[in-house]
Image (cartoon, rainbow over all chains, first blue to last red; front, side):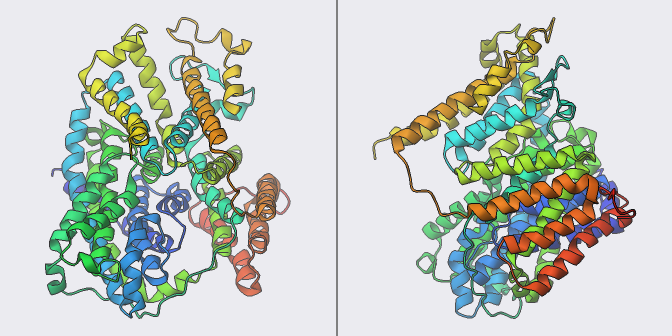
Length: 491
Length: 138
C-alpha cells in the first residue's frame, strides 16, 4: 500500500500512458491476425523496449500480452480462424453467432469476458505473488535446483507434442545456456576458439529467432491456406446487465479456472480456455445450445484465457520462473532493464512491482475501450496480406536481434535460433521448453553446483536433506511418470 | 548426433585442465545435460523406427530455400549495405517469394516500412542501426 503513490506517479507519466495504449493496440491487432501468437506480439515490441525506461518497457510488454490474448477472439468470431490457439474454443460459439448476424454481440461478449478474466487474475496476482515470494525467501540453492527441475519437467510434460520431444527441447535450451563462461570458475566452454561465443548466447536474439523468425520460415515451408470469409459487421455491442446476470457464476468460475491454470508452469491460455469450455458444456444451464452460437461458450473461453495472464505472472515475478514462452520473454526484458524477478523482487523493487499490478488493472480496462474503438476497422486489419506482414516482421526481428547487444553476431544467432525453432516445429517438438531451458539454464547450473558444494559433492544430499526440495522433486517425478502411466493404463 | 559430438567435445584435451581446485569440473553440468539429450534422442529414434515411416506433410522446399538464402544474403550485407538498404532489399524480394504479386501495396511497403523503422530508431529514439559503408547518411 505504501508504494501505491509512487507507482501511480510512475504510471501517470505521459510516455507510460502512450506506450500502454500502443502496446495494447498492437497486442489486439497482432492477436487478431491468424497465426501470430502472443509471443510474436512481444518479440515485435522487444526492439522498442531498448529505448524505453524500466516502467515504460514493462508496460509496453504487458499491454501487448493482454491485448494479444484478447485480440485472438476477433478473428475466431469474424472468420472462424482463431488469431491465437487460446481462442480456438471461442470460435465454436463465436462464429455461429456471427454467421447468424450477431457478430457485434459476439465481440462484445468476448471482450467483456476477457476484461473480467484479466481483472480477476490481476487480483489473484496481487494477492498470491507477494505471499509466494515471501515463502520463497527461505529457498537456498538446493530448493532452487529442485523448483527449476520441477518447472522444466512440468513444462515439458504438458507442452503440445510428445513429452520426450519437449524434454529434448529443454535439454537443447539448457546446453545453449551453458555456452560461455562457467558460473563458478569462469573458465570458457564451447566457444570453439571463436571470440563472440565466449559471451554466451544472448537471450533476446535467441527468443526472437525461435518464435518470430521460425514462424515466418514455417509459413514459407507450408503450402498457403485459404483465407476465411469475413463476416459483415459494424462494430462491437456490449451486452446489457440483464444478459450478464445469468452468466455471472460462469464468468467467475471460468476466471478461477484460468487464473489457477495460469499459475501452473507450461499450461497456458489454450489449455485454460478448453478446460473452461468443457466445464461450461458440463454445467451450464444452456449447455445444450453450446456450439450453436451460445454466448456461454464465448464467456467461458475468453474469461479463462485472459485470466491466465495474471496467473502466469505469479511464478514469473515471485520465483523468477517463467511458466511459458511469453512470460520468458517478459522475464528477459525485466532482466535487461535491471529488474531481476525472483524471491527478492518484491523487497528490492516494490514500486516497480506495484506499478506492474496497477498497469495490469489499467490495461484490462483500456483494452475494452480500445477494442470498442478499433472494432469497425477489424475487417480491414484481417485483410492484411500475410506475405507483406511476414516481410515486415523480419525487419523488426533483425532490429530486435541487433539491438540486444549492438553486434551483428547476435543477428546470426537469431538466424540459427530461427532454424532450430523451425526444425523443432516441423518435427512436432514444442519450442517453449527450449526457451525456458535457455532462461533457467544459468540459474539451474549455479544452484546445482552450489548445492553440491553444500552437500560435499553428494548428489543424494540434494534429494534427501531438505523437505521442501523433496516435495518439488517428488512432484517433478510425478509429472515425468504421469504420461507413462497414461500410456500403460489399460483402455 | 549433434549431442554426441558435443559430448565428445567435453573430453577434449583443452578442457582437461579447467576448474583446477573446484569440486566439480566446468564440464560436469554440460555432460549431464548432454547425456540426457543423447538418451532422449535415442528413445525418439527407437520410437520412430518402431512406428515406421509416416507420409511426409506437403511442403514448399523451394520457397523456403529462397527465403532462407535471401535472409542469409541480407544479414551478410548488413555491415556493408547498412540496415536501410539491406532490409529494403528484403522487403522488396520476400513478398514475391512468398507468393504475393500485387505491385502497389508490395512496392509501397518496401519503400516505406524499412525507412520508417530506420527513421524511428535512428532519429526519434537515437538508437543507431547499422550504417551503410557505401552511402554516407544511410
